[in-house]
Amino acid sequence: MTLPTIKFLKQPTSEAWIEQAIAHLDTILLDHSHCERKAAGVALNLMFRYPAREKLVRMLTAIAREELEHFEQVNQRLEQRSIALGPLAAPPYGAGLSAQIRKQEPERLLDSLLVSALIEARSHERLGLLGDRCPDAELAKFYRSLMAKASPPLWGILDFSHNLFRSPFGDRTAGGIIIGRKSVAGNCLS
Image (cartoon, rainbow, N blue to C red; front, side, top):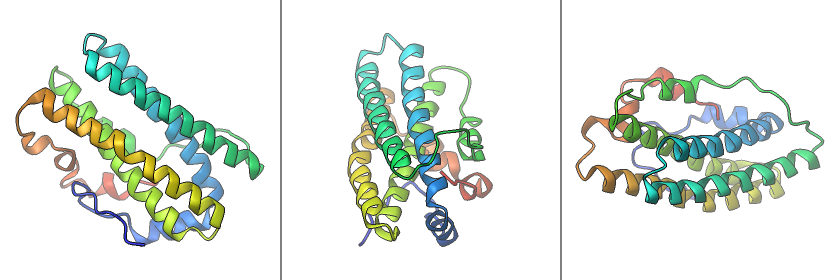
């Protein structure tokens, strides 16, 4: 299977990550559950932070709904495998990206959207890798189906960001946030 290239991911997921993920599918599933829940939470938080931006709120409502649906689907897989939903240490990837969000508006909104898009892009890439390489045929099919659903929110976020700011992002593109920060990008495990 040839996976789509996601242009602003400056580094593809490493082969070592793929091997580690395949060797620890139960942990990947648990982490995936946490990521879906966190993605829904981020969408809700942005809705509360920017309630007057009607188009943004509509887009985020759809994203939160979809992420919670995925959360439920992943949790069903966890239950089928008798894996308890419980705590899991968060990898530094998300926190490293969030730390780069500027504090002043409107840059804060732009950076928040771009970080969300970057995390969604990495997730999309990894769903495809798991769908292609997972030895469990049913789980591989599940990941492929989630990958197909992951594209619209990603492109919606990027389109909204571009339309809102009506100018090139310069060095604050989703890829620009990560340039020169291999330690952040390289540690992404979820």
